[in-house]
Image 1: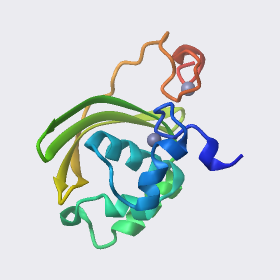
Image 2: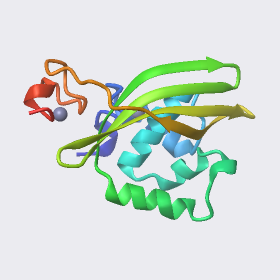
Image 3: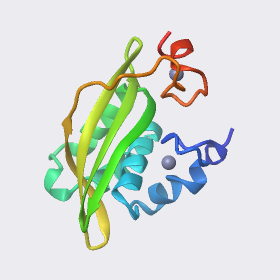
Image 4: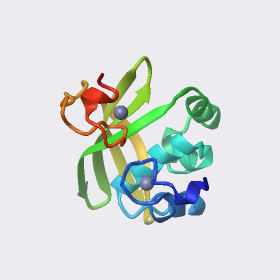
Length: 155
Ligand SMILES: [Zn+2]
Ligand SMILES: [Zn+2]
């Protein structure tokens, strides 16, 4: 199946073509830190290493940043994303999220991230790790399967 017709990996419920794809193609241009966060997550899922480099603040790029990003892409199977909070004040924003990835059965990457806007572009800076969130057994699974957690990744 063509990737464009699929639901976006950021689990917004929108097709990729109407969600993160325009940002990936333009290689920048998210309107909000939350959409930047979502598009960075889906870039990890789809392997858009350059997008991840471009949207990382230049002051935060390590000399081998692209290699590190590619390494993460190649070794991580992402399962889902939950955005828990998004706060913005002028050109500063914070987004709290949990990204899930596969690891017998899964790991939560719960982070509160900082973003800044410079010359109209949002950049990811860094984040603070937080403890795992509680997942309700009867809630829809984080992976977007539509099945209850207890019958899906929580079984
Ligand atoms: Zn998306
Ligand atoms: Zn699941």
